Length: 301
Ligand SMILES: [Fe+2]
Ligand SMILES: [Fe+2]
Figure: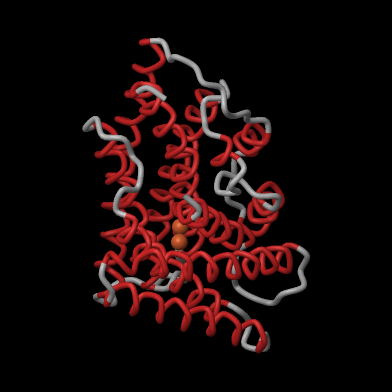
């Protein structure tokens, strides 16, 4: 793949994963505010709409078979549950969710090695610039909420750690965009940092799931607690070891995350079928599943 082709492909793959993640973060924030913060809920709604427009543009541009098949098939863009999770979440919260994007994503194709025209590359550059502006706004928004929550000036139904967690994910998206726009390909040269980043994210997902399950769901609470402990151990080992020992920890992370992915998929199914009691939005269940799929793809290199 030449450099231009790689730029185009990496950009679109990045947006297909992260722009969706960002629009869903905006939705989770919106759903978590109480009436006293109605204007913040409106701000979150605007951000969600803007990220949906960005994602729709990315999906339309990717509709030329440009993205790699391993990305399309990884389950990080959409899963078998996404459309239903969106329908249910919209019904349960009253927050509108674009169905069109998910439909178009279902029809995406992959693996066509083309030589993108200058006009197309220009469109991608514009898209990346738009994404940088938007993610900057979302980062500032999340930071404002964190400052208010940390000083007890605000109450939201989202855990403080969850808001910090989604801030870190937004900053990762931003750093990839900066890297892409500086002319470097957005691949993961620094696997060790990537592994630590995502192991921490996975650990926190386990902690969120543990805390958002109904207290009567004892078996699931125990299972999520065990996952959190496993990831804590992996984090401890990978921060103590040097680069040479990296391969082993990557294999251990992969094994753990494959199991955690299955647990999340079962959880998403249980929530969608009303078989699990929790305060987890169906779309949040699908969201954390996609993040596991994304991490598994990175680890499978
Ligand atoms: Fe997320
Ligand atoms: Fe996450």
